[in-house]
Length: 207
Image 1 (tube, rainbow, N blue to C red):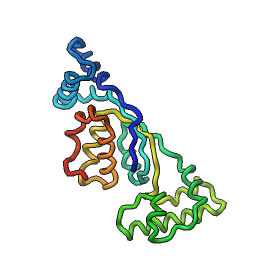
Image 2: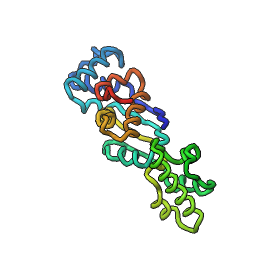
Image 3: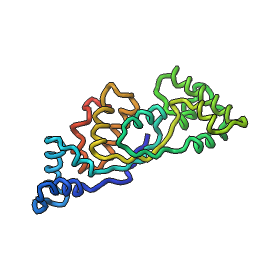
Image 4: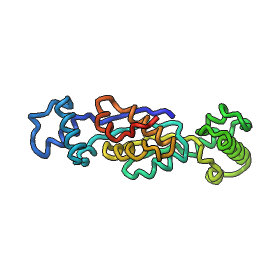
């Protein structure tokens, strides 16, 4: 899994939005400590979380499974743009045989969970898919054979309020291990001066 932060809104935009309510612009410091304290107090402590929607983040997320992607898609207030399966299958079509136990080779296409039995079952599914692609079958039909462990990538835009919800739910022990890792990685990819907005959402037992 690889996370790249492509864009983030300056904190000063959020503090400006908050100060608009009380016309207290003269008390701001352009995203400095005063404005950070204001954002934390109003957005987090006072729970006026709509003010956090002025902060947006765009991430490039690579190497997550389709199973994880499904869980990401359940968060409605996001804008995901996902790599087309057609392009992925064209890459796979030209590969040589995937053999049971060859986790390194299969890992180029699959997210492996560390359970040998499960991972070998995924490799079997990957090889079946590769064989299907050697036939005159359309890519749109072939993708019905995709295992859930198949890797994909996306560009995801999300506002701070929704990201708080994502981190709070998905860093829990009860969440899928992979999306738990994703929640942690998204938090770490944030600029350090933005992390205070989300620290209280992150479960401390996350690996």
